[in-house]
Length: 403
Image (cartoon, rainbow, N blue to C red; front, side, top):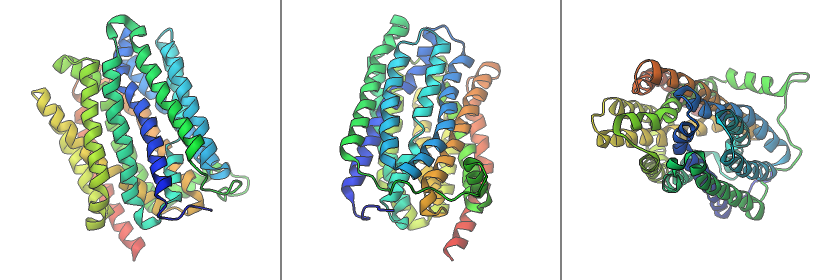
């Protein structure tokens, strides 16, 4: 592996810029999807399927792109996926109906399964003891993109015009994706020697072998489960948030965009300034536990909110919890994984997350329609309890690894 020196700030800045552009395009579309679906007269369960379809594609794509990035390098994979994602936004702008939109979202998700490749690139240029902090900085780039994108999407959308009223924000998302692809092509240098790949058992399917090895590790297996539990709950909220705020507070695309902008701002500040410091002071395990507690409290605050002010506060608390939780989960996986298998195992983790994002919206759509609009919030709060038990076990295991 020919990784840059640990102090290679230029590589880090370029990577963070690409992440920002990628997430700005992604975030621009997310708050609009419920209203985009309504423009086709789609019921709630079909609207939430647009979130699940994306996650199905991401679930299929993450290990593929992660493994290809280990074998052929990070750079070509990032160029292909970011450019393809930009074209997918254009295709969504011209979708003639809800089922065509679902198909496009499936393809878009597959092409967007490059997060593990981005994480692998960051791991390549970062020494192990700095990874939790830099994963937090990486998360802040995600959050900044997610701050700018939704606000812009809310301003550009014209739901009164039907499906065509969403074409301008979708074109804007495509431009962000194109800028990210150009950034990779022009400024990112390769960090791996092409041709190297993880060792697998002869005759064993690579993905099956990699998954078996990952689940045999007591830290990685538990982290995978924590990720699945928490992301499934949050993905359900994300898919129904626009419908919930419309029913509860009469919000539209613009208000949803501002809410997601607030979430992105809180996330960016916390991940850039708090995550690394908290980990250095208290350790990954304690910070992970605290983050899960904040997610649970914030979700309950939204569930019981009598006004949009309390709901916004609850959203901010959840985002703070996520900001200190998920970088630690990724860092723990990275520390428990050999360098030559970083992309592959991180890809499995993203597939695990995508699997949670498949089931979460489907279940939330049913709960929203059959039980109550706030039911997905209550489910997420309850899911935090087993996640806390697992976090305690991971904390003890991590101490054993250091000793």
